[in-house]
Amino acid sequence: MNREEFDRFALEYETLHAANIRMSGESPAYFAEYKVRDVAISLAGLDRQPRNVLDFGAGIGTSVQYFKKYLPEARLTCLDVSRKSLQIGRGRFADVADFVSFDGQTIPYSDNTFDVCFAACVFHHIPAQEHLALLREFRRVLTPGGAAFVFEHNPYNPLTARAVRDCAFDENAVLIRAADLRSTLRAAGFAAVRSAYRIFFPRALRMLRPIEPFLTWCPMGAQYYVQATR
Image 1 (cartoon, rainbow, N blue to C red):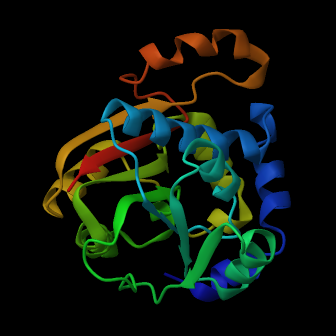
Image 2: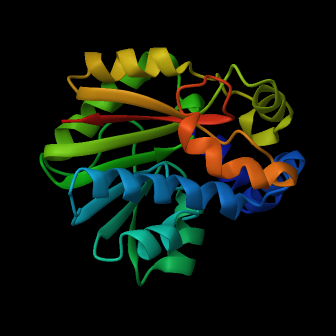
């Protein structure tokens, strides 16, 4: 994981991100919120109330306010390789989350620390040969029965592929197929691995969004997530 690359874009991340997703008609907040809401809904279905949540690759803390909204009782730890991003995040949310530096290899917490490990469009920035070791780290720090949620861009969606191709901070990104991510999570020792495709309609067609929960099987969503259990 390249600390210098993420440090370089820390100050302008939100501006670049907003420009990059302009064609969707939505703001970065829309994409940040739906992910955390999906996690909360999934956990409610499992009848689990997490006490400790790890936001892996948290950057400047974009998801913090939504974890406080949807999982208000959970303690949130934001982990990132970019010290500059962590500094910005700490300045915004130091009172509601811990911001911790990561060496790119070992999550600096003991076994069985977190009930949830969450990653929002992070792994496509990480070389594929490092994915298995990092997901084993997820499993190590999760409590028994804890859940991993890994959100990623869908390489089969042409608008997503174009947005990533044109994005400055995605210049070294390699998009990951859902099937490959599922396989890697299984290889890391996870169980109950499943995926769901998300974000099918832009804001201009938002009246169709109520049917999106019935389309999670369709591999044309702009993004997807893989959920797995330790």
